[in-house]
Image 1 (cartoon, rainbow, N blue to C red):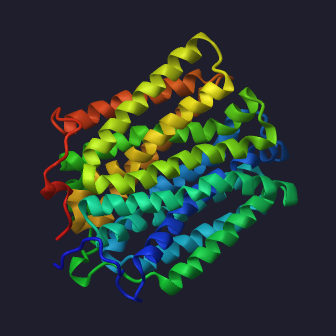
Image 2 (image 1 turned 45 degrees about the horizontal axis):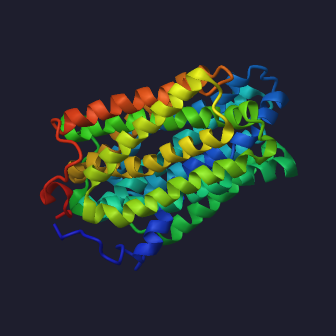
Image 3 (image 1 turned 120 degrees about the vertical axis):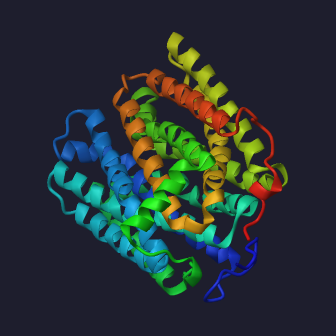
Length: 418
């Protein structure tokens, strides 16, 4: 197989590396858009549809994660068999139709059903975008590319809540769904016209029960893949927990009102900066050194936050500083952990991304929902969740590395793909 490093051209239509990264980021950003743009509208939607319990309004987020998690499993094997483009286009069309349909729902249950369906469509972008990157890059080059994608991807959380707030003022919560559908349709068109097929014909796998089962077995029995995927799941659980509770924390505890999207944007900006710095350092320093150090920092910051919150309400400015520091560390964890987990599995990238995404989304979404439902008017449940999940993730990583943390792996493990 040809050497795959950091080449400047993507295959097919002469797609430049920059456009390839931008398009992959746009595909993945549909997930962030579907989550973050909704946050300002949860209160109005709940009141409009008769949802009195504020914690139950979080189900709009949870239903989306549930649909995505369940649909992640088939997309990977399908993309390994039929290529990346067709399953991707089909999933994106489901996303667009479900978003527009949700605007016409007159019951909370109807909205949840459409959100579940929207998650099913969005799962294609989660699996296939990562698979396409793995088709082209390996090792530290993949980590660098994923960091750049994540940096562009993080523009969405910066602007999405503010856009949602504007849509809310213009046309109510229904207009938020319309804007999601329009944005999704634009990216569908861009992908249809410009995104080439990245799966080489010789890498296609038969779509049979036996081949799918063997691919899943490979993913679940590879020590690095399994344990780093589980570690990512717990870290993502902390992020999902905050997303579920963000509106209640910023508006309910700190009284930010309609200005909370601005604070949300500041935090997302820290994550984008972190991803950019990761892309600059990872080739020289290594995925493991950066991510292990960041996870340790994430744990220590969460511990300070937890101890403080157990004794008194953390004032807004210290809370913002601590949370920004935690999310900055997160930017060095997510893309590196995913790259380490994917590195041994390039020959089954679609199925591998499918299984890993399923575990991360279903597990992280469930953990986030449990912590979110524990919201009691303080940040203590959230801080406890962050710290506890970080400890578990660090233990899993230590087991994966046989206790050798903070050390760069040999070049054969963090090198380029051949």
